[in-house]
Amino acid sequence: MTTDAGRDGMRDTESAPRTPEIAGDVILRLGGEVPEPVTLIRTLSGWGLGLRAAHETVGRLSPGETVPLGLTGAPARDDQRRILNGPGIGASFPEASAGPGGNTP
Image (cartoon, helix red, strand yellow):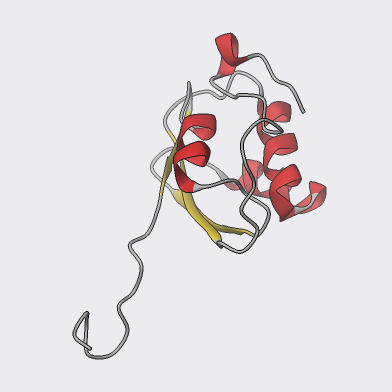
């Protein structure tokens, strides 16, 4: 899917290498008006969220709130950040949980 990077910060998602073995846990937050919500919906849908779930997710975004997602078909985090962070939307990633015992072996 090709998008207009100049207007909404989205990029050509097919050029970003996909890493399906890496779970794409991302937290979206609304920072203002999303100029092209349909483009965001299509991007999330293409990353494994599904069209209906992507539409519902974008509908849940409201100022000051965050929406956590698990995207199974998303590209690497750097690519997700580059593609998603743009006018009106921000993306962050939760720290990986070290589990019981922390980082010690």
